[in-house]
Every structure is written in structure tokens, then in C-alpha cells.
Length: 116
Image (cartoon, rainbow, N blue to C red):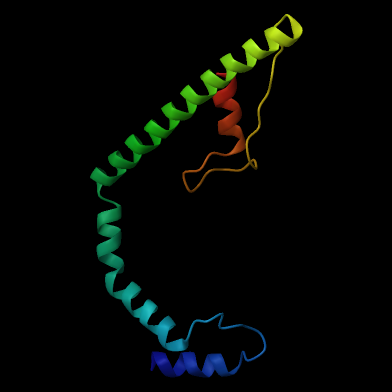
């Protein structure tokens, strides 16, 4: 039944979508595996042990970035002293500003680490 519904849907979308190298059979296999393992995956994902592990990982990333920017700030100040005779204030933006929902650093986090 599920396969029939998808086949009828795919016949209505001939020019609207591209398969992009993915067959209907591969999509059905992916959906079947996802549905079969959904509860088990979420049970593991929501385990408090993994939440603590994730916090340790992000804490380590935070410390590494903070150390990097402290070192960078010191080196920039020393370079500024050589060139200008005084340490000029510098602001550093790295990458595109954004909210780091995937664990990446957004512009706010980088600016915070630099000015801390």
C-alpha cells in the first residue's frame, strides 16, 4: 500500500522534481530502516549519559577556542606595539555570523571569545 501511494505520487511529479541519482527503491529502503529503528535511536539519543558526553565535548571546544583567541590577542597586541608603539584594539570576525545549531561557532561566539 505504501509503495503504491509513492508510485502514484511520483507519477504526478515528472517535471517538478529530480531523482538526483536516488531511486524509488532506495528511498523506500531508507524510509523502512528509519521507521524500524526510530524508537531505538531516540532512546539512545535521549539517554542522559550522551547528554553529559556532549556537554564535555562542547566544553572542550569552548576551552580550545578561548585559548586560541587569547594567544591570538596577545600576538596581535605585540605586533601592534612593534608597528604603532601602542596596542590598538582589534575586533576579529571569523566566518559567517549565525546560530551554531550543529555545534559550529557563530559570529557571536567568536566575538565573545575574542573580547573575553
